[in-house]
Image (cartoon, rainbow, N blue to C red; front, side):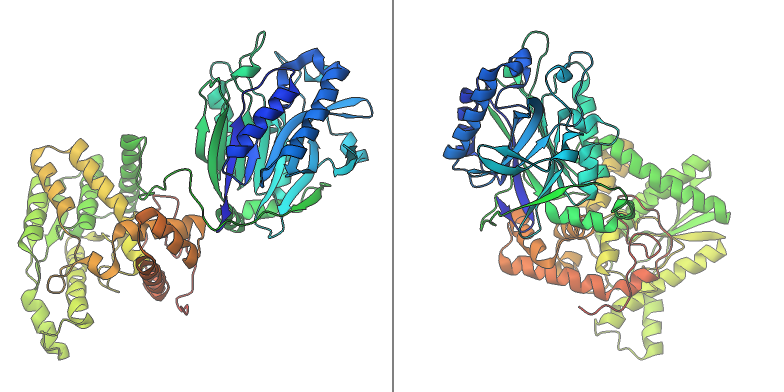
Length: 620
């Protein structure tokens, strides 16, 4: 499967018999008849089996291996790319090799370069390293055909798919062939392996593969020998791994007696996006001389694409080490705020508390920081400012939270102030237009700023990353503060933090208030019956778009397609979300250009001094 910049790859550990190429190739063909992927990878020396030892010297095994590969080519009905491992004899010398096959044609053959010859491994007894021969030969004759040989990068005609090959020990070298292939354009590194299992090796192997994919800004496909290779004093587990850009996509290690297929979806466009953005990767290009050949192949895009793994619809929300990640985020916010308080020698902290999500999180960080500094919580001036459309539930939540947390509480009704301002500027005070909304927001900010002067403190901003990306804030209103503590946290992560504060850090009174805040519809309460998500769409969906845009560099068309898959939206709904997102994102950049300082919390930021350097005037 290959569509819209995604390619499905299968990493296979087949059931096999040591020294029986005919059986092994037949098993491969059975797997290829059922596999649903565009590239399928089998383990190192999978045609003969890895643990043949001195059988590799026997003409009978080598001849049977050649016949088996010929049989595979003749009977291969699979339309994708197949990568298999087999011994290759060149001028009477054996090379542990990878064969890249498309239907009935061998596209190229790659020798193993680093041969392990310590502990339980004795490969130099049977095989020769490929380092010297690739200097002399760029092709070999095999089954009557001239086949590209040596350092090869395989590229699809459309330029989207490109991959190179490593064989087992190559990966463990200080400078691996895959590193060189990656900086010469290979987006995917495929490793055919026969890595035996001992206690602790699985973790080391996984870390190594993840680091390769991170350093190379690409994907890494690892297919390893399984339990049927286990013989004499070595045991193999079939630990297969698929990783991309430092993240694990999928892995298995089941000691399975039967053949096992592991599927993974590689995002080729994300690899392109990451490489364009990574200056260190770009700086390595063309720095190291390396002779390699390009092998072009054709692979057709499919109309349909079925993902092997369900997409995470809340990618910003921790799923595994939940409490540890919660504490890390809290500590980042806390220590960022502590630094600012110390630097400006603030006597107090002023914060507007609306009873909504963002101001709640900001207040929780404020008390955490003051407790750390051993400053009386009464130095936190928490201000609730009910206005023309403040509801009883949000006002109650704000007051309950402030009182139960023991901060200084100010309640300032802004209605008369707002009406006086309407009179001053000639607004009728009835028409609920943008002036009507923003007047309230700016008056609240002015009050907070002046209180900060009065109490020799700073105003703590509350707006989150999602609001700022969408421009859902009032310029020189809630957009402005003296430190934006939540500007690095998307809305779905804000909810995660408040929930974990409620469940893990507070007792009944505060916990109940926090849970009530989580259950209250999100609204700035600036007009009648106003609900944020009615205007800009669900934050769940918008945060997912943020994830795809900032982490993957996705186009509008690709995002529309993914929204239909992830959230089961119809085409009209997905198009509306996408168009609205990009329209708001580009038109509101001027607000982000004037953002106050804020701590970076996750791997993306919208600070004009950090990750996002955009002009304010972008036509969309």
